[in-house]
Amino acid sequence: MNRSAIPDLSSRELLAVCTIAEHGSFMAASLTLNISQPALTRTVQRVEQAIGLEVFRRTTRRLEITPAGQEFIALANRILADLRISFESMREISDEQRGQVIVAAVMSVAYTQLPRIVARYRESRTRIEIQIREGVHGTVLDDVRSGVADLGVTYIDEVPVEFSAITLATEAFHVVMPKGHPLSSKAGITLDEVSRYAMVSLPKEAQTRRFLDGLASAAGLILQHAVTVNQFATVMQCVHARVGLAIVPGGAVPSALSAGLISRPLTKPVVNRTVGVVLLRDRGLTPSARGFLGQLQDDWSLSGADESVRQENSV
Image (cartoon, rainbow, N blue to C red; front, side, top):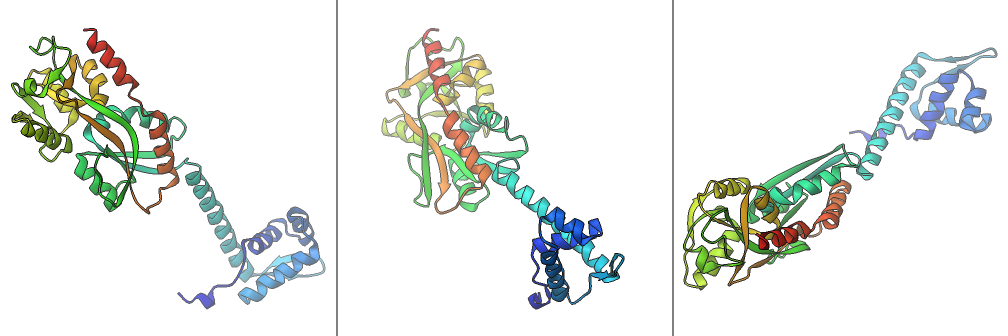
């Protein structure tokens, strides 16, 4: 681009020329813009000098716009309109009234907590588009690392050094099963007892499954992963169909109970994992992503799970 061929003009100067053309009078334009006529005359002279063209032809009786001036005024109006639209758009983005947020989340979180939080966020931000990318722990980190996602929600007990983490809550794990299951009469269920039954599980690459397999191996047990599925909702459906039982984080207990399942805390060992937000260090968030992060922190609660624990203990 030949930058020397671009006239050095300000939006104020463009507005002055367009206002004169609109009113057909220097006097009326000076009143509208609240500047003196001599100052307005100097502004027009500055514009004409910068573009090397005569915009207005002044006579004793009237003001005429030259043919070149008509072309320039049309261009100036388009530039001013584009500036107004652009600034309004940027203001909407800054005020979280327009934009996009992409959230990567482990499947258990995407299935349980996120829908309620998304609904709360969009109550006052209806023009923000939300994308939720469901996956296992590794894919959540990959999405945030690559920039595909603005932020991730996953287990943060161990995350690589390139990420910063914000704690949301600590979740204990529970065993869910269909009503009438032989273990449903117990107040708590041990990993040894779980190992005697078929299980519905997430894929091998899921961090929770690897963690539970590690605990079982350390205790000399082997978990029976009879059915492996890729969606958390399918886990619940398979358990409801009596395919097997499943071990889920505490945040999923309300969903399990609403699906007509029984939930009991996992004991011996008691398993706790920390759920949080992962962000790539030194990468800033857009205004809409910052707003969504704030909504996550404000609304995240295990109170529903705690209430469900009280309900399951009363069954």
